[in-house]
Structure formats: structure tokens, C-alpha cells
Length: 601
Image 1 (cartoon, helix red, strand yellow):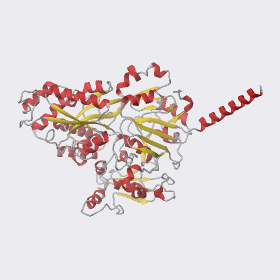
Image 2: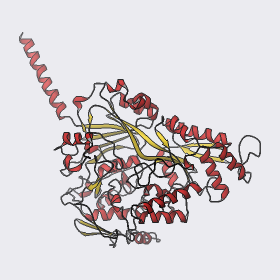
Image 3: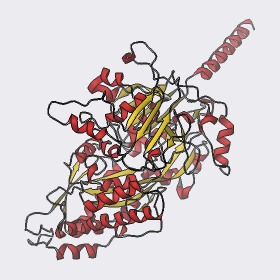
């Protein structure tokens, strides 16, 4: 009996120990990216997945309310909303004192406070030719006075970018006040300074300390900091011990009729952010292993369920019964996103502005079966795109129809015949009008969805009598080559980062070649319309400018817009508070992990 009492006491002690350990265990969010990151310096990245990470590391002056729908911009590190001149040319922002960067050797053991000059420095970095920022074009179009002159001076032989030279357009008036002065009216400038993933505060001493290795050493004031990175494999982030005291209710304002949002506010009221301690992100490009990691309980979130598993996950829009029994939740999401093929307008085969070159691109576009791409590669989750404007952004009309959405092989063949793209040798393949071979070199990736997309493209072109050569590379490699003008064609996607369609039309602006303008299209009429879109306040005149730009893009076809995406997200029962952002990218600080709800694997 004594032995049994001792054994019982030991078991009780073990139970207490295990319970205490579980209570003290770190809250860890685990999930996967479907595309590899490129790095974590805001001035050097523009791909979605790297920006998801940087959005949690760096602070913008403003940010989006996580629960408000469709969107609400509110102060982040700023004190109140900006002071704006009547002509929208002068914007003044005050920032909160007492905000600190995460600790780093670059600070030599000192606590480093966030100051206005950090934002001045980061803005200038986008213009430094040595940084080679892909977002340079985006920031140039804001027309901040004087910063372009700094860049031009740095482009002279033997010159360097002068970060110490003060300019009128962006200046720290004191330690906590920053003023922007713009050459032209920018009514929506607020959306730019709300992008913490790009225009997040960076300390100059950190950039200078790490030099060329800055992509691997992000140091910000955001809720998380980078703890571990194995390139294209694993990204680990942990709670930033220096993050300021922020409570959940300070950050969110759900709509009054939003029952889910109101319930989340009530549940998390009083909780300090972030609520989790650690985030572990695996890079799993193939859909099957990514889905299995979620089903097997290795991931808490299935961010964009692989399209081949849609019917297993949510048949007919409802969570499959076997998953629902495990407490798994599903979310059907309309993305402010679209996919497209670009034609390199400088390429000898598909580029150019002559009638025969335009005819070739339009024929390819008419002969491409976008609906089958959606059904076959995306399991029906999407709608045929009718142009560059993305859902939820200004000017988007879901009822609009245009030739961008047409699939008409007969018209495509007629165009090719009319402009001399004929099968002169009788082998079933067309030649160029001068008799040289007609060959499309199309880049893609090795994952299953990309293989399906290129399969449909190749079949569509074969039906027109056009040869296709497929070039397979990793997504970051294709992105780099595409921006450099080294690809003939590539299929990729875009995601709106603000509730304005202007970003989609940046793809048509010649000043953004090397960045957003992947097709390298140069048309003065499009440049003029883009300037007009930037200048005009919201209203019918601006909507008409969008429509005119759409018409010109359709006429010259530098892009074939194929689909607007839908997505499925799924969460395990232990992940609480998840809601997919609309335009913004940060959400980790607003979710919690309750391991007591975890289903044993």
C-alpha cells in the first residue's frame, strides 16, 4: 500500500509538472509559404512572401485596422492622422516617443529609439542607385521634392548617394516630426506611408553595420524579430522584447454589424500584443506536402490551400466533414489579386509596337484558354480577368467585360494569317512574317500548379500552330530575370497593397520598368494617363482615366490578364482569432495559439 501511495504521489507530481510546462510553453504559430522569400530589407524586396515577413518586423507611420472592413487606416507609430494641406502637397506627421528598435550589435549595447530621421533615411534608400530598389518607381511617382536630384547626383561617375544632404521634400523637423513636401497633389499619399512592409523605419547604423548582408539582418520596431533563417527553407521569428505596450482593443475597430469581429474584440480585450511568442515558417512549394503538413497537424494554418486539394478541404464551399469533426475551420477568400502573362516589349519576337507585333500578342491572348487554367490549375477558384483592375480597389467593376477575358481561337488564327504568321513549310507550325521560326520562350516554375498552367498554355498555342519552349527556374530567379528584361514571357500574380487601383496601372508606366512594369511597355499616352490618375481626387473623372488606360492596354496587349483569384484558408482549432487581411499583410500579432485545443497527432 505504501508503494502505491508513493507511486500515486509521483504520478501526481508529474502531472503538475507537465501541466505547468504546458502552461509555460511558448505559443508558436506554424505554417508554410508556397513561394520562397528573397530577403528582409524593405528597400530591396517586393515579392509578397518577403513582404509578409517585413510587415511584422518594421513599423509604418500608419497601418490598417485588422478587423475593419473593407478597410480603415489608423495611426501606428504616428500621433493622430497626418496634417494635410488643402492642395495635398504637404503632409506632416508626428510620431510617438519611447518606441525602440529590437536589440542588435549595431547599436553597441544601447537602446535605440525610433525617431523621425529614420523615416527620412529609409525614404532616401529607395532612391540610392546602389540599393537597386525594385520599389524605386513606386516611390518616385510620389514626387517628393528633391529626392530625385539626390539620385541623379549619385549617378555621376565616382559619386555616392548623399544621405546627409537635407532636401525640402522629406525632412525631420524635430526628433519626432516628419514633413513631406510633394511637387504634385497626392490625395492618397496616406496609403503609401501606411506600408510598413516597405516604408518601415530602418536605422542607418544597422544598414551601415551589415552592408551587403542587410537582407539577412532586418532590425525594426515591429512586434517580431528575425531569430533564424535558412534561405528558401525555414524562417523563424520571435516576439520582440522591446515592442511597445499595445493592447488588442487599441488596434481594432470592427464594424458594428460584424458579429465575428465584435466577438474577437470581446475575447481578446485587454490582451497585450503580440499574443504569440514565435512564428515558424517552412517553405513548401509543392501543394501535396504543404497540404499534408496541415492535415497531419504539423501546421496551424493552411495559408492558401493548394488548389488541387480544394475539393478535399471544402467541397461545395463547406469544410469537409472529416475535417470539421477535428475542429478545423475554413475561409473562402476573395483576394485583391490577379494573375497575368507579360510580354517583354523589347523582345525581338513578342515585343514591339508595329501592327504585326500587336497582332501576334493579341492572337496569343485570344487563343489562351483562361477558363481552363482556372478550372484545371486552380480548381475553379477564380474568375476570368477582364483587365488590370483588382477586386476591392477603386474603379473595379465585376460586371465589366472586355477582350482581355475573351477566348476565341478562330479570331486568333485569323489575326495570325492576316499579318503573315503562316505555316510556310507545311509542318503544322507557323513562321514569323519574314519566314524565320516563330518560337515562344515561356518561363515557369517546377511546382505542380505551374506545370498545369504551362500545360494549358502550351496546348492553347499548339492549337494556333505556335511552338512553345518552356524554361523552368525558381520563382525568385524568374523575378530577378523578368525585372532585368531577360525573359520573353512569364506568368505571375499581383496583389493590391492599398484600396486603390493605381498600383495595378503602375505596370503600364514606363518609368517603372525594372520594377512593377515587367512588360517594359513604353507608351506616352499611358504615362500621361498614369500621371492623371495620380493627380486626380477620387471621383468619376478618375474612374474614366482608369477606363482609358484600360483601352490602350487592351489595344497594345503588353499583358494578358488571365484571372482574379479566390483562395481557401484553413485553421486548426488551436489557432484563434485568424482573419485574412485584405490589403495589408500583417496578422501574426492578432492571433493566439491555445495548445489545450490541439488535436493529438
